[in-house]
Image (cartoon, rainbow, N blue to C red; front, side):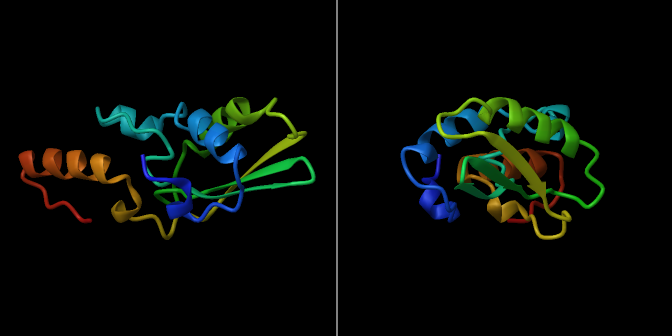
Length: 126
C-alpha cells in the first residue's frame, strides 16, 4: 500500500495508520461486482482526511457522477471510523465524480485491472 503522505492526506500520525487500516476494510461494491474486489484506499477514492475539533472529515472521490453506491460507501466509512479516540463525529463528503481516473489506483491494483482488461481485449487506461 502506498504511504498516506503520497496521497496528501491532511491528518497526521498516529491517526493516519489507524484510518488507513480501517478504510482498507471498506471494499468498493462495484469492484466486487466486477470480480476484482478493491478497497476504497487502494482504488484511490479517498481524496483527503481531516481531523479538526473531534470531527473527522473524509473527502470521498467518486468514480462516476452517477455512482449509486455513495450512500453505502459513506455508511461503511462512518462505521469503520466511528469510535476512534478523539473523534466525536465522522463526516463523509463526496465529490461530483468528475476527476477520478485509473492512475489514482494503487499500482498493484492498476496492474491487475490492466491485465484483466487486456485478456478481455479491451484497452486499459492508466
